[in-house]
Image (tube, rainbow, N blue to C red; front, top):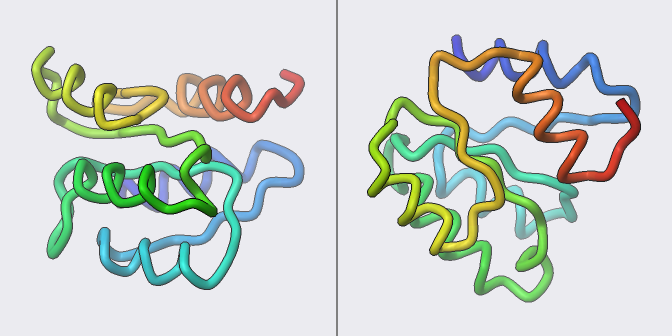
Length: 113
């Protein structure tokens, strides 16, 4: 449900093509098969959580500089600090608001408002 909301919100940004992944492992498979401009992930995912995904992406020479946005229910300062230390560029807590997500993506991709 949350992923559908994000896809709908991102569709408002002209030129954005969204690829969805079911979990961190699926995301890594998709990253291995292509190049992406930005990654949005949750911390809480099955098989591989979002923090492990961030760590793995930051060690991948092809995607190490791709902006990563964490969108999660984990609102604690320790969770935020850990995500940012691992290499996330932004941290948004749920419930998400589409304008906040859109603004964050536009900012990280240097897209006009």
